[in-house]
Amino acid sequence: MSAAPAIPPTLSRDGMAAALLNDEERTRIRAKSAQFAPPTAALPDGRRDLVGLSREELTDIMVEIGEKPFRTKQLWHWIYHQGVTDFSRMSSIARPLQEKLAERFIVGRPGVVTEQTSQDSTRKFLFRFRDGQEAETVYIPDRQEDRGAVCISSQVGCTLSCTFCHTGTQALVRNLGAAEIVGQFMAARDSYGEWPSPKGETPRLLSTIVLMGMGEPLYNYDNVAKAMRIIMDGEGIGLSRRRITLSTSGVVPMMDQCGAELGINLAVSLHAVRDDLRDEIVPLNRKYPIREVIAACRRYPAASNARRITFEYIMLRDINDSEADARELVRLISGIPAKVNLIPFNPWPGSSYRPSTREQLERFAKIVMDAGFASPIRMPRGRDILAACGQLRTESQRLRRAAREDAATDTVE
Ligand code: SAH
Ligand code: SF4
Image 1 (cartoon, protein in one colour):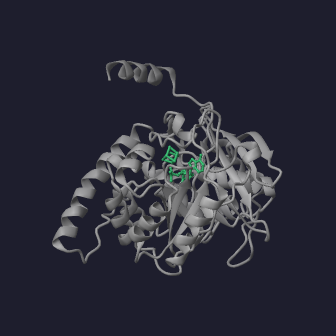
Image 2 (cartoon, rainbow, N blue to C red; image 1 turned 30 degrees about the vertical axis):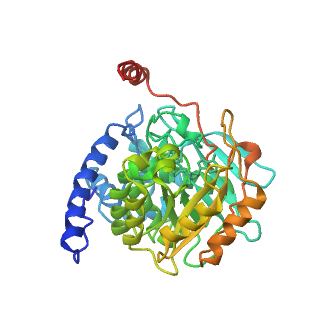
Image 3 (cartoon, rainbow, N blue to C red; image 1 turned 90 degrees about the horizontal axis):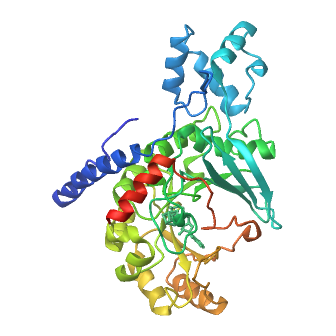
């Protein structure tokens, strides 16, 4: 994985100092992330999954087995454009090579444990990966048109514990690998039979990706970035970076990197406009306070009038939903090409918050709108199957050794 510096060439002295500090932070975040690495892509029988490899890795593997590099292009087409998982269906490849590939490799998918469809057509998948760990993915169809968003998980569990979020009650088990991240999208496409990948502007049913499922994607940046590059590759799935949105709770140093390297859309889970409150409900705020998060948004290169930053704001009754909060929000984000997504709180078993009243939601939305920001209220989808924002959680647990270490740390602290 390239570690290209995310420092823009035209920085002031202060900006340069901040960027260097951020570089150190990035190294630290990546080292931590590596402790939660996914297992290797090899099956017990020694075969290897070709999904999730970069083009360069795929080429290296072909050369290793004595094949020409151009095989990469062929395989890429079958795997990501045609969605074929069976080598014997790859008709442009001669039979002996098909057999040779099948002996050594697979084109994998996560296993589908359950697939539930809500009354409002939202579909939730529980996927199981090769080591038995599980994560959820949700497809949210548009109500009017034949398109929709796939909400993808980036981790099993989450290290952060935002107080309103169900995933936050589950300890981080591990990061998902690139194959598992791409695999969620491909398996959802299997479920709707959307292969081959529609080309160019041809309408797609699974038309956008939101990295808003379980986990903090910027704490698993390398795997997420690799997966998004595969998904954006024009000879395969070919989804434009304009149709991909990554949601973060505000991992400032990685926001810069994401903007510089991937250029996908950014959504920021703001949820509070004062540090004392945000410290409590989004504990990462103690590390990266509101001022720094907003500054990172101002620097975000993909932000423009056509591609605005989304601020997500969960509406918790009597906690963060006052009119003064709305006015402060507007002040904070003034000058940023932005929209504000107001998310009614979705309850989950054991949660103690209450959603804001309809009137309060509308009063809040009006203040934001009058200041010139679009402020759609995100209507909950798939609540009946616990598929709405913040309701995802699995029973996956850390391996016993890790769990014991955890328990030991808990008693020390
Ligand atoms: N970790 C990332 C991405 C996953 S969460 C992040 O926090 O941004 C995706 C969105 O769902 C976030 O905006 C999150 O704050 C919101 N969310 C979490 N719990 C929720 C709940 N109970 N009701 C409504 N939205 C919730
Ligand atoms: Fe993690 Fe996002 Fe949930 Fe916070 S809201 S606990 S960062 S998944």
